[in-house]
Structures are given as structure tokens and as C-alpha cells.
Length: 122
Length: 106
Image (tube, rainbow over all chains, first blue to last red; front, side, top):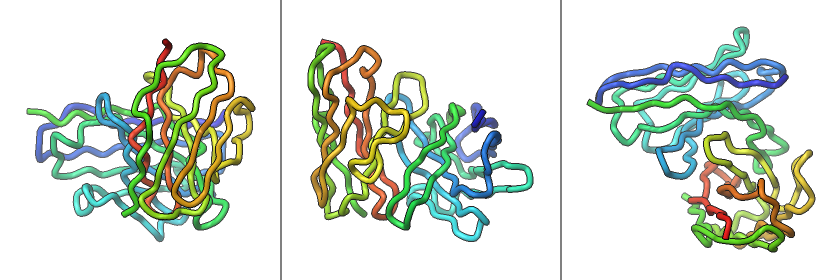
């Protein structure tokens, strides 16, 4: 069974740090671009970051640049998001998502985890 | 950055209705657009990719069309399980989503 399982969410104070993990199983993790997508309570989806299969390319939404770092360990079939200098507006459910790439402009998020909730509050 | 605007933001309809949701890009994105469905408390699910290609396993009552800046998602005959929120996503560059369209039961 194809699965993505996020962990590491929780309550953190503003300015604090958290590291999210996403464990993959049932598919060849090293073949996929991987993404983090978040959803603030009652709001829409926001793409956060992605990483190429070999980790050589990483991209971020402007609002997290310099604060968040995406990484992966293909041997462990795991994706990570290191989140520093957290702000109240980072409060959201964070999903990891596997990206199928047909071409540089034809791709989609085909695999999704159930998400992990991050709450930034004092 | 390319902005994606969906309309309407919410929509009430009945089982059996035909429904159309629109997504407009702030500049041409050719056919580089996906559609997702998200049921409450669940992860999003891919419905349509490349504007009109139906993802495997998705019922044929879902269809997508459009190119350039204007795109539509159509559900030909609403079923109870279709009441959810729908998002478009551009794949021309940064994978921004539209703000979502909540489809509710009338």
C-alpha cells in the first residue's frame, strides 16, 4: 500500500523551531520530487517547498525562505522540513506530497499524506 | 508570480445537478493546470491534470477544459460524495493553488 505518514507537528512558541518528517512506503521514493503543502485552519492550500529526487534542487515559497529547509534521505525513504523562527501565520496542517513529473511543465501531486498540525502560539 | 483566481468561492447545488467551476490565471499558462478535490478533514485528491486529463480511478462525470488563462472543471451529475472543496493549481512555474471553491448541498 502506498503511504505517506507525516509526524513532528505540535505546539511551539513564536520564534521556536520544529522538524517535520514524512515517511514513505509502498512506492519508489527516490523516483519522486517531494513537496510540503500547508493549510491554515479554515483556509486554502499553500505550496511551501519542494525537492528534487536527488536533493540537488530545492524551492520555497517566499514567505518561508531563510526560515524553512526541506531535505530528504532516500535510504530512509523520508522527507523532512526544518522550520525555524516560526510565526503565528505558520500555523497549519502540513502535508507531504509526492509529485509525478511528466515534463517540466506537466506534473501533478499524486500522493498525499494525512498531514500533521503545527500550532505556533504563546 | 502567476496568480490563480477561482470562481465562485462557494456554490450550492443539488444531487444530479451539472456544476462548473472556473479558474483564471493572471497570465497564459497554456494547459499547465491541475484540479484537486478535498473533502473535510482529508488530504487533497488529484482529479484532473494538464487541464483535461482525467486521473486514473476518477469518475468520468468529472471533466476539465481550457487553455491559456481560462479553465473549467465540470461535474456532469453531482453525487453526494462530490460535496467538497475544489482547488486548481498551475504548473507553469511555482505550484500555486487557487483559493478554492466550496461546493455545498442545496
